[in-house]
Length: 441
Image 1: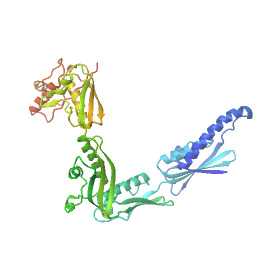
Image 2 (image 1 turned 120 degrees about the vertical axis):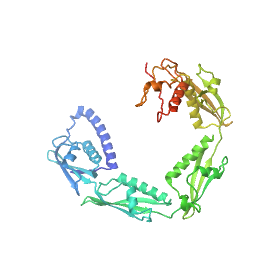
Image 3 (image 1 turned 60 degrees about the vertical axis):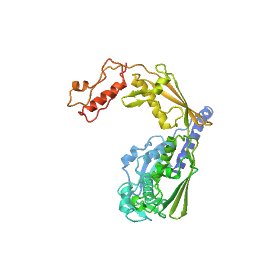
Image 4 (image 1 turned 180 degrees about the vertical axis):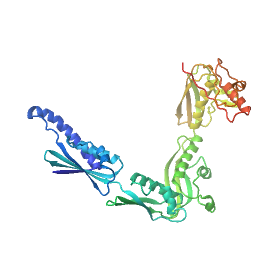
């Protein structure tokens, strides 16, 4: 009797099922063996045959190195299924078949290998033509090349690349697929990209439905995707490009959040075609509340009062203080900046290990956001040493004369910034960077 198996999803499911059944039978066999006798031994592999459909894609030595079954060893379905998996992983084969045949003394196993063909031609069918879509230009865009073995994931990726190129050219409704014409006898293949460009589409309008806080004009300015107008031939506007559109959508969300509309979302995107070559884009917006900061409180601050932290500290001309206080518009970016400002306030006074966590408490009825800064204060740090690096021409003592911070002193970020400013003012250096490194105890 001969059994043939193919490397396909169904075969893996069957193999899993067989493994589960075998496990049940084995357990049952052990219990039954106490009554009916020992479990029979696995048959031995008498012979392994390797054959190819079409041209051989790899040497027999490489093939045998990737199979577990050996002549004279025990035979198991699991081992042959693993062999199928291992051979496909080498990347040389389009398909792998295994057949097992009962012979005198055991089993004869045959591996039939279908090698991946070499790509000898890349063709484009249905191409829109024109200067932008010359085949020579399209070939440079894709990753598939003649002379290489067939790589289906790469070909699929190439269809996405071609689709984006057509969309950039104004063919928003374009479709791109592919076929592989495989000559198994010669081990060769032609890859054919099928293009359906559709009409060249121009954007007539972009409408922001339910926009109340901002005008249509203000919102259109957020987008780089623009309506078609009589100067579009010069500005290249009026075309729909997927990548740019995705970026514009992210920018619109960011724009609203920066204005305090934290709950903003786009409920629906609708693309309508009043004419075959014209597009109107409708965005259904939910603006939500414009949140303002309600209360701002500090917890865990024993070294400095809440009022001191609010007032902040001046590091040269740079104020270090939270600015998003009661009554101001709440934004995620502002919250991140203020968290850093509270930490920087402590660092400016020498407390380098300070950690700050902010908890947001929304009050949807009032449209406010309460902020609670939970502070874990660090210990006061001292300057152990001041290292100077990168000075190949200027002596250390010349540089140290300009410093406002010295070993043994309490760490002070204001003095660090002042030292940096003085060194920049000498005109001796292209750039001056400072880095604070904590020395482990």
